[in-house]
Length: 591
Image (cartoon, rainbow, N blue to C red; front, side, top):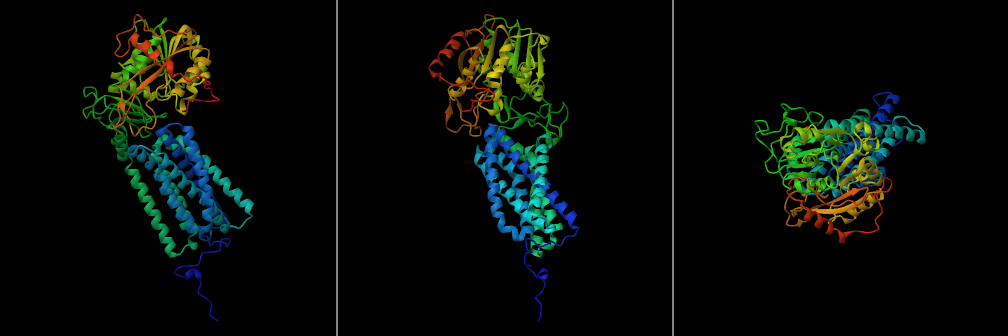
C-alpha cells in the first residue's frame, strides 16, 4: 500500500490542526516570547490608533467627551464582532493573522489622513470617524483568537495560563502605546505622520512573526501573498509619509480658504494665521520670521527648513485660528474686543487689570488705550501663542504690540490653577480692578471648568472692592441655553451680572466649521446661506454693575453708550429662566 504524499510538499497544503505543535526555527520558549512580544507591539499600535482618532476628532469638531465616547464605544463593540468573525480563521491562524495585520496597518496608518481630508474638503468627519472606529475595532478584536491559537501551537498550556500571558502582554503594550502617543508621537511627529509610522511598525511586527516564526504553516502561495501584501502596505505608508507636508498644506488651504501663512503645532494646540502679510516686515520671500522645528514647535527667528517653512499668505485681512476655530479676524476684531473690554473699564478705577486668556494680545490692546492703566497681567496657557503675538508681523501689528508694553506681564499657566494658587495674592500686587475673561467658547468640553461656579468664585476673589469682571458667554441668539447658563453660574458664585449682546456682521455659513466661531464672526466660504453673527457678554461685580462707558474711554469704532444700553435691552426678552448653574461635577454648558 502506497502512503499518500506528505501534505507539506503539496502545492496547496492542508492547514495544520489548531492544536498541533508548530515546527519553529527557534526553541519553543523563545518562540513563545516572540509571540508575546508581537502581542505587546500590536496592542501598543492599536491603542495609538484609538487615541489618534479621539484626539483628531476633538481637534476638528470639539467636545472631546463626545468624541472619546463615540470612538471607545464603537471600537469596543466592533472588537466583539471581530472576535466572533475570527473563529472562521482559526484553522489558518498564521496566514489569517498575517493578512489581518497588513490590513490593520493600512487602515490604522491612513486613518488620520483620511479623517483630516474628509473634514477639510467635505466639511464633515463624524461618519468617517465611526467607520474607522468600526473597522479598526473589528481588526483589533480579531487578533486575540488568532494569537491564542498561535501561542498554543508554540507550546501547549492550559487555557487560563495562555489567556493570562496573552492579556498581560496586551495590557502592557496598551500602556506603552497610551504613553507614547501624547509624549512622543504627537509632539514629535504630529497626528498624520505618527499614525503612518505606527502602521509601519504594526505591519513589520505582524508580517515578521508569521513569515519567519510560522513559515512552516504557510504554503508557497500564501507566503508570497503575505510578502507582496506587506511590501505593498509598507510602500503605501512610506509614500503617505513623503506626501504629508503637501497634503497638510493642501488641507489647510481647503479649510481656511487661503494659504496658511503660519501653521504651528504647539504643545497645546494648532495655531494657524492666514492673511495679514506685510512685505516690509517679512523676509524677502514674504514668509514670516517664525518656523517649525522637527517637533512642530515654534522656532527662533532665522532661516527655516523647507519642510517646516511658513508659507506666504494670499494677503487680505488676518485670521487667527486655534485648533481649526476662528478666534480673531482683522476685519471684525474690534466689535468683539471693544464689547468685552470697555464696559468693564467703566464704573470704577482700572489701574490694575487681569486678562485671563487673551494670549493674542488683542484684549490687552484695548486695555492699554486707557491712560490710567498701570499694570496688566495676561495669563495664557500657550506660551507659543503669546510668542507669536509678539513676533508675527501681522498679529503683532493687529494687537498694537501690546505684549511688548512695559506695563504688561505675561504669565504662562492654566488660568484656573493660577487663580486657585493665589495669582492675585498680595505678593503679586494684590487684587485687580478689572478682570477680563477672554477664554475659549463656553460650549466646548475643554473649557467647562472655566465657566463653572468654582471658577467664578476664584475670579471674584481676585477682584478689588468695586472691581468688575467681564465674561464672554457665547452668542445668545444661536445658543441661548449656553449663554443663560453662564449667567446663572456667575450669579450662583455671588456676583451680580448685567448681560448684553454686541451684534456683528451677517456672514456666510462656513461648511468646514461645525462649531460656532468663538471670538470672531469670520468670513468663511459662501454656501448661499447666511447667519447672524454676534457675541454675548456678562458684566459682573459684587454689586449691581451699570452698563456704560468710562469718561476717559478712547474713541471706539463700534460701541457707544446708546448702543450698549440697546444691547442690554435686546436680551431682556430672551432670558431662559430656571437654569441651574454649571459646576465641576455637573457641567451644563453643552447644548
